[in-house]
Figure 1 (cartoon, rainbow, N blue to C red):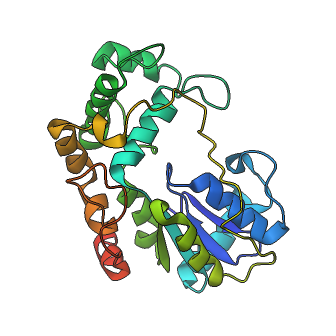
Figure 2 (figure 1 turned 90 degrees about the vertical axis):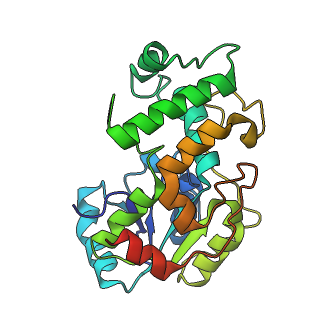
Amino acid sequence: MGFPGVWMTESQSVVYRVIPKCACSTIGQIMFYSDHGKFYDGDIHDAKSGIHKWGIEDSQSAITERVTSQDTYTFTCVRNPYARVLSAFFDKICGTQRNGKPYRGNLVPKLSRQYGVESSGDFDQIKSFRRFLLFARDTITYRRPMDPDIHWSAVAGHASTLIKNGGRYNKIVATEDFKSGMKEVLKNVNSSHDLDIDTMPRFNESQGHGPKRAHPVEDYFDDLSMHLVYEIYKRDFVLFKYDPQDPSNKMPVGEIDLDEVHAKLGE
């Protein structure tokens, strides 16, 4: 299986497991800057040089060696399941992608026909999101009408592949406490170029793709949708210490136990 979703600095100073909708654009730019003293000109997801990625064949042997030897600082970044699935809806379902087209071609028309999801014009955001949540649950739990998409499949599933194939995390950063988390990462990395996390720009490549969220996060979740979110993302809530009872509380409610994460996700 290898190490899908793993990026590594060209200098092999740090390894990162990408998790979609969890600050991956900003993290990739931090890694690029730490080697080159400048940010990548464009979307870091498009970079084919200057950074190692599992999707680049010539990078795979170096990534495999560093991850399996467990001698290179390795981290990932997680996010509150409520905010993450809501972000996926606005970005991927309601938004236009970098190529100027809807995400995954006919996905949005299919959602409209089969689930009654509206995503353009003056639509009812709350109603459409809750219908999208049913679709997300069906893809993750029943793998129909399609396999789950990486942008709304569980964080735990993404994080587990590195562990199951012989890697180990030194740090799991919470998106909600991003600055302090990344400062700790950089303290443990021998960077060629220092970067001030407090003053650097954020690289939100999905920003502006879709309509602006019209309500607070908690307004999108009634009792049924909270139940669905917990059904889908139970491991994310438990392992990464988020509160399933309060969608308005985006912050973790406890410290992540790395031993617990490796034990549970390595099974």
